[in-house]
Image 1 (cartoon, rainbow, N blue to C red):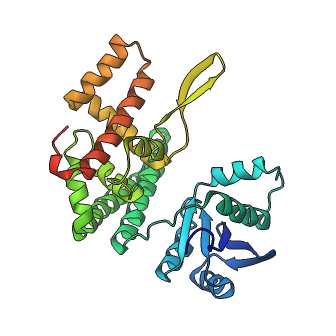
Image 2 (cartoon, rainbow, N blue to C red):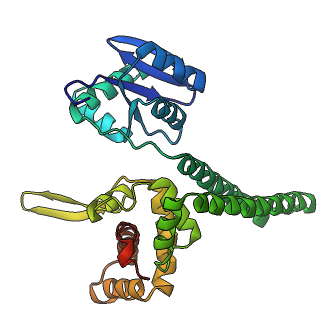
Image 3 (cartoon, one colour):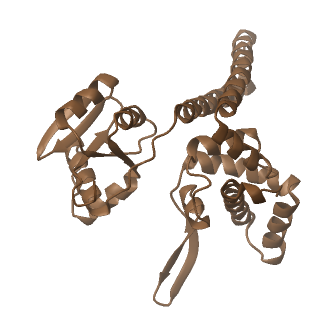
Length: 309
């Protein structure tokens, strides 16, 4: 289908429901396999557009992709800003579904790429790893303030269990990457960059599947490390990063802390920004994060020229 022939259907995704406004008629389905199939049976062939909602959209999106339908997953802030630009201040599930459809007719988003089975598994495993790490952090904090011996014993027992689970999860993540030839090749290139360890490599593969196909500007924007201008007339304000994929940005922050210590190129780059250009350390560290993301993308894009950085 070309853009003129496409029939768009916006889907407002929540934890429990999938709301649509198709041909002026609102409808609601369960956010489950059964509900997504009922939605497709009711609406039929269309270009479905869903907002990225922290993973709640994945099940329905992947099911429709498996059925051969065109699906686009878009940034919710773009849809909201579009609604505000159209003077739409009210916000309900049917209204949001209608605004997603209107946004799609205007922006004409390209269909999202269907992830492979291994890619889907990697996303789930990497997300689970982060969940367990967050729980471990909370339990460690509780242990520091625990006074009762019985309570400390329970927390330590839970921490030992979390350690075993994380070790088992790391093995599954490595097996998943090894099972996919394409992902393993990408991982080999990313690992050659000092500072990008196993955790950051698998996070990039899971949450940046486009890696290796992007330009320098695109990869910086996707990970939320592109500095945007704030100029107007004679005023030229300081640039700020904005948006992007938070999980990747958090991972690259930890990688940058390592890189400025063990990667000679990044260490010198960081030193020059701080000591010679008098940039704040946080700004310099953000620049290192951006440089690591660009280096990882370039390494995957040109594996024949892939060298340790």
